[in-house]
Image (cartoon, rainbow, N blue to C red):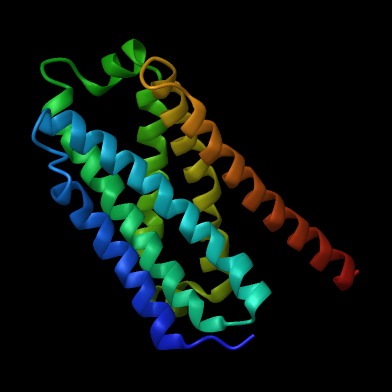
Length: 196
């Protein structure tokens, strides 16, 4: 199957740009700005993590290696939303008590915190210079952190949503994430059998 590279990448940019302007088009931030930004940035980070995880199966299925660039775009967009989510939490949510105390009062915060720190090295090394410096295998091994990062993010959202809007959407994210993780595990198992 042959895809037009420019059209595919343009479509990826449309998704990213639309995610930035969508809240403003719907007056999303007018009622409760801090809560709205936290909610939207958190959901957007999970959505773009899922999109990032979907690229590898698409590359294999469609045989279009150029989609690796789309994976990088979606991954960095996810990190942008995670960073925004963390900064808003840090400056507007903690108030007088510390992060550790917040972990005890609201355990779901810890899951989000560790997910954020899993994504930091991935964002820092998402460039060709890092691949050359680390070596391809080491770079690939490091970027397996996207899986625990997604799992931690999904549990963070699930535990929070149980007491808020309900866990249905969080469970949907978990389902798709587990499906993509299964694809990854199956691919590695199949490859090891061939090597043996």
